[in-house]
Length: 354
Image (tube, rainbow, N blue to C red):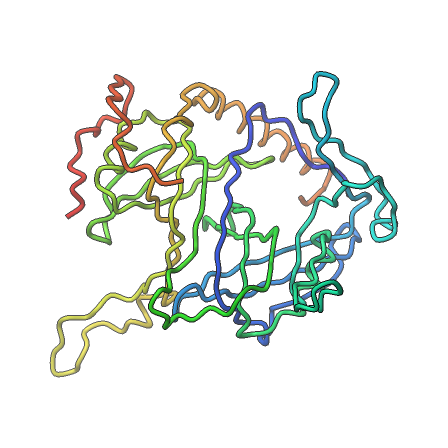
């Protein structure tokens, strides 16, 4: 596969997630599909739900296509005794049969979607396989609705028809011990970590007690706008003190909430509003910030000038392709005294969030 990566002059702000839950949606149309893309390469994709609490589902999806090569890596020591990663490039056709020195591991997706009996212990264990995304999509067709899984992976951001999209892409899917939402000790596990380039913090216009954090996410070939949220008034005020284009790593919970407001008024015709007309989806998913890493704050690497330059490089690359007809972790203190004359003008905004 051709390498479409361009040098935009700044590093990616890669987000990650992990969650545990119960698989659903495997038996529905759209769980697995395959085909051939416009460049003639075969592709596969999966999309399924993971219920993280009773009635609350997060969707994960993975796309993979045939590549020219695959890559194996291993941690080694350099001449100065420091750790470094050695990478081997292997032709696609040899990905399942190549023999490399011990310790090299395919860079791909860790799949433990099938059980097997361990020859040494006789216990039932996951049949773990490290696969390319293309092969992992097929392996995930072994999943069944109702199975409990642990998933970790990367968060990707994109724009589609004017909508800002968030996608959870697994790098590990493993069967785990059965999850019981009714158990007394049950606690949801749906977490994220995301470096952001902060733009603005404001009170939510629709949800009392909530602040909206507007931010930019740097991908390898695009810069996307997104919104995160927090219900911690102290943290909201701290984030609001950061000047725009400040980099900071935040973390928290992936929450799924009802998107239907309660109707309190009615007349002789009952409810005054048809909720089907008002709500596109009955649930909304949010990245809810609970803490931030004050040690990650950087006001230089993602300055407005560098972001603008990166955008100009991205736009120039898009024009060039068009010309050729191508398609294209929790800390709740206030981070100390962060007095900054360049901070948001509303840094004294009332963030009691009541």
